[in-house]
Amino acid sequence: MYKLYYYPGNANLAPHMLLEEIGAPYELELIDRNKNAHNSPEYLRLNPSGRIPVLIDGDLVLFETAAICLHLADRHPEANLAPPLGTPERATFYKWLIYLTNTLQVELIIYFYPHRLTGEEALAETVRKHAEQRISGMLDILDAQLQKSGGPWLLGEQYTAADPFLLMLSRWTRVTARPAKTLPHLGRFLGRMVERNAVQRAFAQENLPQPWY
Amino acid sequence: MYKLYYYPGNANLAPHMLLEEIGAPYELELIDRNKNAHNSPEYLRLNPSGRIPVLIDGDLVLFETAAICLHLADRHPEANLAPPLGTPERATFYKWLIYLTNTLQVELIIYFYPHRLTGEEALAETVRKHAEQRISGMLDILDAQLQKSGGPWLLGEQYTAADPFLLMLSRWTRVTARPAKTLPHLGRFLGRMVERNAVQRAFAQENLPQPWY
Image (cartoon, rainbow over all chains, first blue to last red; front, side):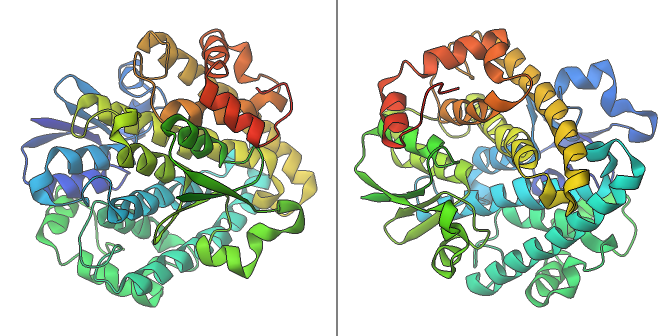
């Protein structure tokens, strides 16, 4: 039985969608950000950076969303959520998953919390505006990859753990000046994603309101 | 024959050290940042984000340093640079490699190029100072992991692809107010790293001057 520490709509959403795809038993445990629970001593013992989510798998305490996605894909090869080890397809899968986590995810965190980078609210707005521009350029790169792969998924024919990760981050862009859904290939990708039963179940369990992206 | 596009001391250093550990044939191709070669149309066709490095492996064109490290480890299981698929050790390996790329690596890029986040040099210094503080906190987390793992390497007994990655980023901190080498466990780790022949060969080939970290 897995346990996923979550807060609705946070970075837990990608592993949550994967757990639903896989069909493995799991439980959710709310970390109430409104009560600063992610900075409690108990939670910091699980993840010293205080970020959500954490996955518990037996004795394993795992943080970093992309690592959780990789681990779930590896543990359930029958779900076919990652290409086979040592193949070019596997390398390309790593490439896009890591691109998502160290560019778009990071930039979105800067967009939402620019004051962490400045300590001054007045400068924060400048930082936020620049982040918004860079996010837009990253979405162009992802849109081009969807075009190049031929779809329906980020890597082409195979649905992988990178797809729910992309949906999760695309959803976060809905409040920016140029949301992911306004790009042609990304927009169609997002429409396909929310048709998946596993995706719908995860969104419903987190009580995420419409519009979903 | 692999080809690694590089610039001395850039993010190519981690895959370069891995190629030396593995002993596979490869060639290096310089991307001269001083001539803005990383933003040339030819290079942007390999990596649309313009970042260094890119690895060529047959028909595969791979960017994202952490993805290159994972791919090299997977392609050469005999080198034992990553734990077996589906194990808790593999998950922990993912966790730290991804932590390194989406926190410390990103934060160091902000430290070195703060104007990208502000567009104004005056604000850039504030952003840089904040980045320096956050880098220091991340080094504490890594130092604690080295203590917890018991060493000699980031994951404990097994030397993995995460270790050269950590050396590479630690090296970049040498110009900050609190370099990685000043932390007790990190300092000893770095000393062990540069005793490795493969590490010494990669540093020599990139003509990196002393001090190495």
